Length: 256
Image (cartoon, rainbow, N blue to C red; front, side, top):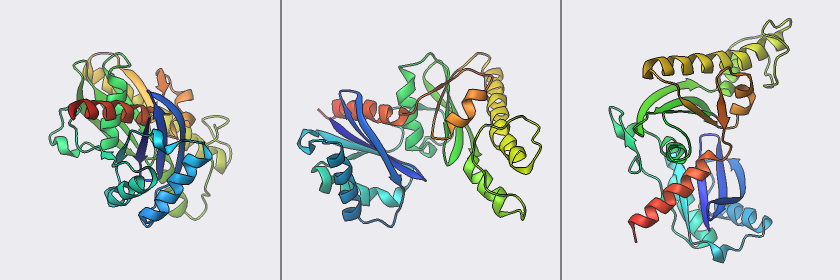
């Protein structure tokens, strides 16, 4: 059994994984001001609430796109479960075709590792969180690169902040593409605008590759968008936890 941790810009997701099965997952807000003792207390309370026996842990793994929290979180994990976590660094488990492979984030490495052996290639990997990212893995298992777009919530907060009359909105489905009041018009833009963006980008990717792609989506905001897309998109809620399990075992085999 391992403790898998995915640190994003908005949330930290914790998962307890045993033999590939996610026993539970939970999240807290990402806060670089928290000390290792505060984070250890949170981790311990989370595990206790799920009746997890910490003596059963064989190890832990962390993926992070927030470097300032990494050392603090490593110490917290060691305090909570007495295991030194492995931190995913770079693209050692992925064939990357970027101009500078060091630019690929650990979240992208983890997501790619999770889908390569599970779905038909080529793959478009969509993550709709703080940012919306669309990255492509070709039929030869090579990570080609992709696109980074401002996330839906970031865009909506900026819209409300920079205008005097536009409020904050929820991401409920709009009644129609033609909004007949301010709220519905904003929902149309936020939801159907992102639907059109995603469909359009996937169409361009397929045109550039010259073949259809399998599209996998993750990230908390994907569920508001993909039901309305014309492209078939498979939603994987725990994609990064699955990828962390895969990478943990690859790392373990390399260090036997």
